Amino acid sequence: MKTIKRNAHIFKLLSIYSIKTAFQSKAGVVIFTIAKFFRFGMFFYFISFLVTKTQTLKGYSQNEAIVIYLMFTLIDTIGQIFFREVYRFRSLVVSGELDGVLIRPYHPFLRVLVGGIDPMDALTLIPYLAITFYYISLLPHITTQNLLISATFFINGLVLAAGFHIIVLALAIITTNIDHAIMIYRDISSTARFPIEIYREPLRALITFVIPIGIMASYPSRALFGKLHLSTAVFALCVSGFFLYVAIASWNHALKRYQSWGG
Amino acid sequence: MAAYFRIFFNTLQEYAVYRVNFLLWRVRSIIVFLIRYSIWIAAYEHVQSVASYSKEYMLTYIFFSSVLNDIVLSSKTYDIAAEIVEGKIINQLVKPISYFGIHLSREFADKLINIVCSLIEISFLIFILKPSLFIQTNLVTILLVGIFLVMGVIIAFFVNVSLSFVGFWTPEVWAGRFIFFVLVTFFSGWFFPLDILPPILYQALLMTPFPYFYFIPLKIYLGIPFIEILFYAGLAVSWVILSWIIAKRLWKKGMYQFSFFGK
Image 1 (tube, rainbow over the protein chains, first blue to last red):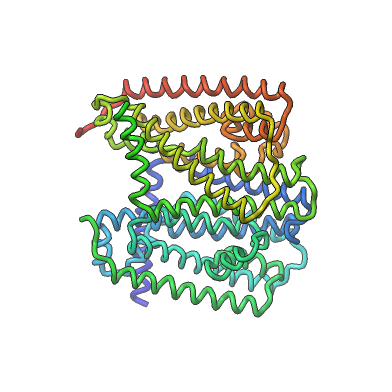
Image 2: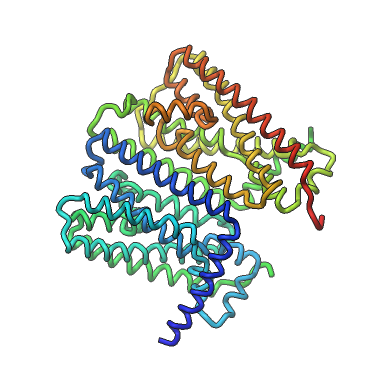
C-alpha cells in the first residue's frame, strides 16, 4: 500500500511537470488540438460517407462503423495521453540519460512509460467521449451484459496498448537502429480504425492474434454489438495475457542487454 | 557541381547506414497502403460505383496516388527547420557552396530513393493483389500528367521550405508541420479522391495548393475534358509562382532577422 501511494505521488509530480512543459507553448497546444479535431472530423466524415454510399461495410451499419472508429479513437487517445513519454525514449537511450533513470529508487516505467502524460490529448478526449456515448445510445438492442463485456474489452485494450508501448521501449534499448518503432505501432494500430473484417486473410489473423491490434481496438465494439462469441472472447483474453507477458519479458531481456550508450 | 553530386551520393549512402530503420520505414508505407486498399475493396463489395468512381478507377487512383505521394511529398527540407533552430545553418551559410544547392541535392536523392522503393513496392503489390487497373494509353495525357506532377513537386518543395523557415521566428516548428501533415493527408486526396467531398468544399479546395500535389495529375490520368485541364493548369501555375514568392520572402525576412548565440 505504501509503495502504491509513493508511486502515485511520483506519477502525480511527473504529470504536473509534463503539463507545465506542454503549456509553455500555448500556440502549439492550440494548433495541435485543432489538427487533432480536424483529423478526427475528416475520418468521421469519410466513414459516414462510405457506409452511406455502400449501404453496409462488411455487414456493419453506419452507426456501428462509426462506433468502431470512436472506440479505436478512445483507446488510441488514452494510450497517447498516458504513454507519450515513449515517443521521447530513444533519445534517453542514445544520449545515455537512461542510466540516470535506472538508478532511481522507483520502477523505470514510472518515468519512461507513464512519466510524460500528454494534456493536449486529454483535451480532445472529452468531446470524443461525449460523441461515443451519443452514438452508442443510437445503437439498437444494446444489453447491459454486452456493455459490461465491452467495458472489459475496453480495459483489456488499454492493457494491450501498454504492452505495445513496453515492446517499443524494449526495442529502443535492444537496437538503436530503429528511430520510429512507435510510428510503426501507430500505423499498424490504425488498421483498427475500420472494421477488421475488411482485411483479407492472413492479414486479418496477423493483426488479431499475432499483433493483437484487433483485440485491442475492435473487440470492445464487437462485444457491444453482441458479435463476440464466448469462446472467441475467452481466447482473446488469453492472447492479451500472453502478449502482456511477452512485452514485460522483452523489457526484462532488453534491460539485461543494456550497456549504456553515449554519456 | 561536383560538390552537389557528392552531397547527392552521400545522402543516398545515409539511408544505408540504418538499414533496419530504412526497411521499417518502407514497411510503414506498405501498411498504410494496405489499409487504403482494403477499405475500398470492402466498399465495392455490394456496389458498382462510389461517387462516380468505378472499382477499376478507384483502385487505379489508390495504387497510383501511393506512388505519386512518394514522388511529390517526400522531402528532406524538414532538416532546414532544425538547422535554423539549432543555429547550424550558420555553418552551412559560410561554406563556399549554395545553401539551396545543398538542400536541392539532398532533396533529389531523397526523391530518387522514394521513387525507386515506391515503384518496387507497388509493382510487387500489383503482382500479389492482381487488381484491375485503368491504363492510360494517350501519350498527350501522360505528358500532361508529367507536367502537372513537376508543378506539384515544385509547389510541395516551396511549401515545405516555407514551413521550415518558420524556425526563424519560433522554435515551435513542429506545430505548423503537424497541421500541414494532417491537412495534406485529407486535402491532397491521400485517403480518398477529393471530388467525393461536398461540391462547395471541393471547389474551395481547388483554390488551395493541396489538390495540385497529385490529385489533379491523377484526375487528368483518369480522363477529364481539356478545358478543365486548362483551368487546373492556370491554378497550378499560380500556386507555383505564389509558393515561390512566399518562400523567397520568408527566407529574406528570416535571414534579416536571424541571430544565434554560441556559434
